[in-house]
Image (cartoon, rainbow, N blue to C red; front, side):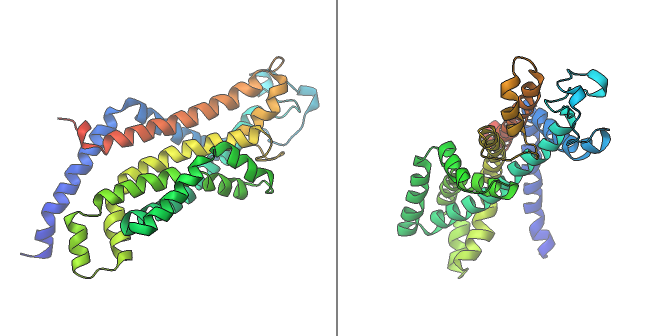
Length: 295
């Protein structure tokens, strides 16, 4: 039997599994809504500012606090007469970029800690997982604020700070999944033929644990966007004139009575982005769980 013929049944099984997962995901209406909303937000943040005939930094005192949709300003203007829509889209670039970058960093580090602890076990697992538990003992928002207060705020530093307070959940998910796979026959077979530990971890265990990692990563984006909004709202995050959804809310809080749209639109964007990523995470969790199979 040729190699291609031997691999054909495996390829068919993988294709069948993928089709079933896609059918389960399509059944989750909120997850589909989340995917569409995320794509539209990303595209609008990238392309939108180029299509709007206003500069995000142009100050026009004569037209400050213009209500929507006055004079072509679809979302109105802020306290300095700047177009709110273009600032909202530019802020989306910052907030979403921080969310995605923090997810990548925290997922990579959490996966490394979790797969190491789950594979080697023993004293290594005890030390690593007790460190994870110690980090989880601190409320994330307070730890985030403490770190942000002593570090010069920028997109890079805020991203790293959020990642440093978000990797623990990923580590626990990966450790539990790897520990459940550790004694499977294909892992024992790889070890019996002399495969090194690094090969077993990253070529055998990691691909089989990718489902929970993807779900955890999706939820981490939502968490990162929300944490950036927390920090910026409290004045420790992204600083003016650069806009993020969090510092737009911070600047709008003193005008809630006279110009409520300054807080409503950034708040809606934060709510929509966080809810969309959570919906996608729930959909992926159901799609990767065979108990939700479609007959």
